[in-house]
Length: 495
Image (cartoon, rainbow, N blue to C red; front, side):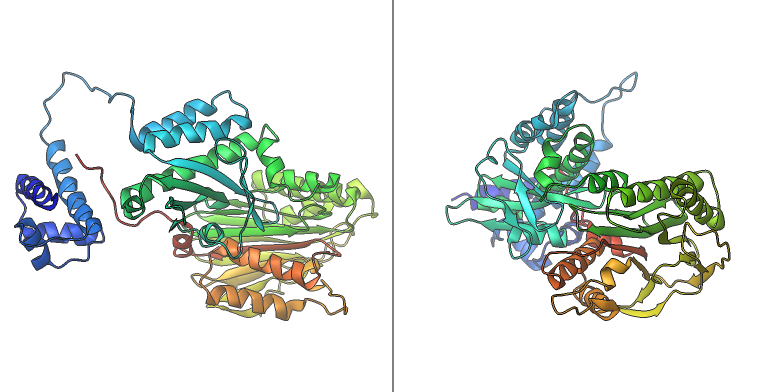
């Protein structure tokens, strides 16, 4: 029997903390423990047992306090001494990934990831979401070469991706797995299949947290290595892209981003043949500036117009220009570059993240929607300007005072004008209904955008007649919680 030595060691460690049982119980409950104080006292006295996961939480609570005590009782050095390079655990895994990808092509990432997993005592295979966000594609390499893609809808790995939460399972052959979302910042990139040595490890809160940090670093590395190689990007391209689609994709910012005050999520369809749609944004401590532009046409010329528009917008914005000047810069770029042959519509907006004051201009474009408490409450049609590229300068700036957690919905006419085989438009009503369904399910903001894109594709049976762009900007300090799969409570490493 191993129970008696275990409780004796636990009791000895507890006595070293000089805590009462009540004080230990409070720490234990804060770490997710569910046993009562009487059960804990009986366990420490050897009179009763606790489930394995509860015993581990007791150990974490004890070791947390012991770490604090040990930190205050160190022998002094004559100078500051830095700790040695880690050789085991999460720090060693992160160092291995940083070292392994330095001066390495993207193709090296699977082997580096596998080596890092060895420091955590797990096997691992990475999956990346394709650009249509329909499939999770395994990254070729150690363990991933022979695996088939997985659907994002209807699978447990897909649920981890959609909901941004760690999922656990034990397969028929007894292999225990954690499916961990891979993100860069708050942008979803894929999932990690983390294979543990035994099922009991699936309930280890420390392993969950370590895998979360590990997957987060992997997300940064995927984004950085994709910038200078085609290996990972080629896995994610679901269909060959046209020249204009490649041009626009290179112009887009991350599809999801956020700060502690705002979240942004966007999407453009069809991913393989984008024409003249583009969006952009810039987030700071107190402002969110964002724009959507729809240049006429779907050919390479429309792509050039979109490129000119977003470049002019960024140039004006980064030089400190106001809303009027930003819109005029976009107008001038299209008018001077295309001499009336190409026109564009658009929305340019500026949100004060301290007060919630939104200022915006709508240039011949569908009016943005204001989404509040799960419902669309109004259209934002006050700020108007004629189509960009026409030499008409009559402009008025619209203003709206947002409430906390309000979402501004920007879209192009390719969303609402999308027609099915019976020539029925997708329409504003379907857009609103899809948004409201996502809110009712408490979906993360990027998943709401994905659901809308799916609905548009389904309405047109996968063949879009025009670019369809959606950009959601949420003024919030709470929506960020849905984008963070890290456990809330700290889990210190045991001594």
